[in-house]
Amino acid sequence: MQHIMENMPFSRSDHQGQLSWTQLLQASKNRRVTENSFHNICEAYKRVDKCLEECEKTSEHSASIRRTYAGLRFICVEQKKEFFNNLPCLAQYEPVAMSRCQNEINQSLAGSNSFSAAVINREQHNIQNRLGTLCRDLGNMIKCIEPVTRNGCGETAAKMMLKFITVGFTR
Image 1 (cartoon, one colour):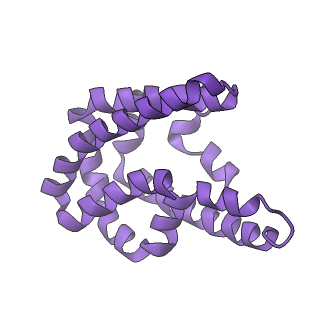
Image 2 (cartoon, one colour; image 1 turned 180 degrees about the vertical axis):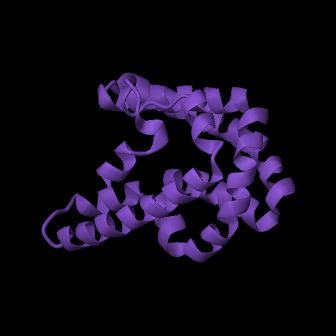
């Protein structure tokens, strides 16, 4: 899984784990790259999930780790057929949404990076505040991206995209 993620177009940066709008935009411009990336991620996810399932017998932490990947489980297992049926359209409209929602995406990325830094650095006094900011920023990003997706790809694709964005925070 790590090998796949390290070879993603947006992961080759000096700030490991932190994404920028420019990196996301570059990756979204090529529909084939987007589609291939999701196929590769899902294949890697299946291998990792199988391994974690086996580890559950010996480690109390593997179930927690599996919950961390809830968004990937959603698109790679639970809604795989529907997701990959909608993926060509989602990939087509991704650059449009990225262009229209640049400010909201940047703010969401900054909030995500700030929250991640607080967690990594164990800044307990900042985590709750940064999580609140991240949730607000994700909400604003969703409000911007959702109409672009709905107008371009329809109701089903829009609902799936919204669920994918939020599922990792609710499981």
